[in-house]
Length: 305
Ligand code: PPS
Image (cartoon, rainbow, N blue to C red; front, side):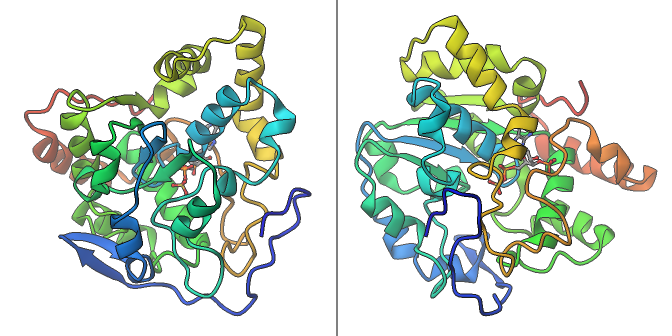
């Protein structure tokens, strides 16, 4: 299914039906993903596997590309071997009858594998923790995360219909979106980060100082590379480079899944875009809700740089 030349992958061109959200142990999930849940839950990780976990739209692809560049010693040709979603499969992804599921793709990859997930900590297949797999969790401030998720749900036909911006704003605050409440997700991983080998990083930090964060990831992976290679990784994983690269910009996903007349995957890639969408009333409502939900936690985010 992977196309190396940037043309669209050959998936069944029939119309994709937007899924419904169905609660899985209280967490709203696309119903189509749950059709493969048994395979996800029983997934057997290898101790050397690396997991990249995020709430959707928090910088997953960016961290995936950085990790692949580190593991490929900064070689851009090797990182162009396949689209990012084939190089680092998305564990719980499942569109029956269209493309292979995440677990099917993973079954074909040799170990050690790098795996993407958006699952909240409590839904993570037990094997990752039992095998003490290294996990990188990347979090993004809720306001920009919300805006990015709204535009993604507009374009992505395998997400429920987002409705208007105002409607979506309330859905997000109620946790009535795929993977549930942002607050529960970031806090769930935060409180467990010291009990397991979890590197907890922030989108805003990578944006502010990519080299420093890339070095942090390298240290976590036990990898050393010459400074010139690290600079090359900074260059190739910049927003501009990734946006221009068909192997990292999701342009190979067919138009019946990603409707690019609505938005693009590599949309803006900035911190503070929420200011272009939040009304004053929404901002006030957001802040008071945020204060309550995050109360008592030392987890801090930056909404501007
Ligand atoms: S997904 O579908 O959940 O895997 O999406 P995810 O990759 O987590 O998030 C997509 C957003 O991340 C931005 N992005 C980047 N920002 C800065 N630099 C780089 N290199 C980069 N790569 C991806 C992408 O543009 C989406 O954010 P928005 O705000 O929508 O632009």
